Image (cartoon, rainbow, N blue to C red; front, side, top):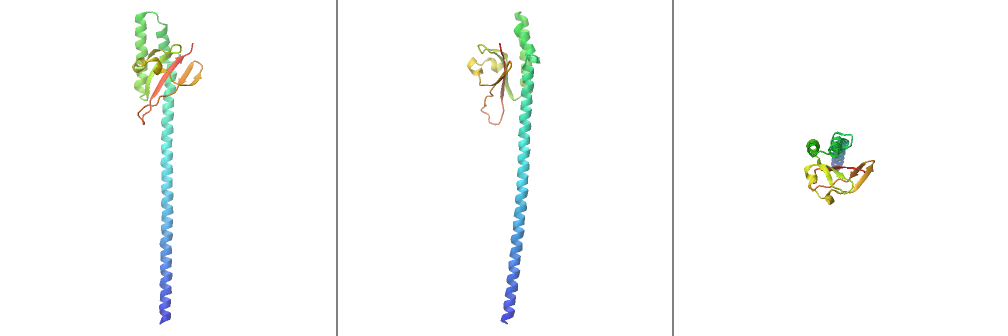
Length: 177
């Protein structure tokens, strides 16, 4: 009788150990699969977010390049500013100034990330023309750290804004000479 009992006990122990081993194995395999899937989802979400950030950065950069091209002496606004500065007649000068203001307003309207655009004299630092906000600034407020100078163009640092999640750019063009 003891043999039957011991065989039953051993058989029961073997079944219990194999059941526990199967449950542990399936738990470990499931955990590894879930962990792998979560890791892939996190990586794909991070890639997508990074691609969005790069795309937004590239778009912002291209917008600034387009603005700078229109501000250059051969660009639409640059040419209008040159005409305004060369004009001697007060009435014609006023009309050309309004033309420049309208073109600058068009840039500010179509590029919401740009806060202000202005032309500033290199000597003296007074603002010749620009957006309404820029015209009310004092000379000290328009001076920024120079990042790079390429030919006649000086590129200034971008001010940080209090709004953490919104980009604001100050675009300025200083003509040398």
